[in-house]
Image (cartoon, rainbow, N blue to C red; front, side, top):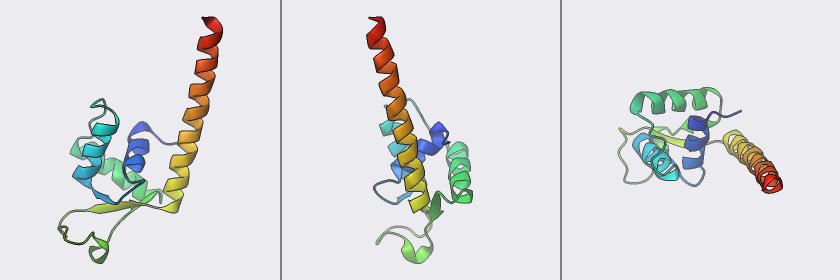
Length: 106
């Protein structure tokens, strides 16, 4: 099961490869400013996701054209995309259950 930081990082990488600060900016935007990933938390999360095979760091020759080779770029793996889809499905089912119960109590 993905922790919130992991979920949001995978979501940031779902549609494009990104470097660390672009991931942090995307997470901030996704959450309306509610989740700020400071560098230590961001890179710990990235390292965990790499270790779990959910994302991978792009090597120098796979960096986006025109981008700095000094930045660390990441991409979601197929395993990471499946984990994100599974987590999103669980959240959707839970949200539906909550809406049903809230509707029943009104």
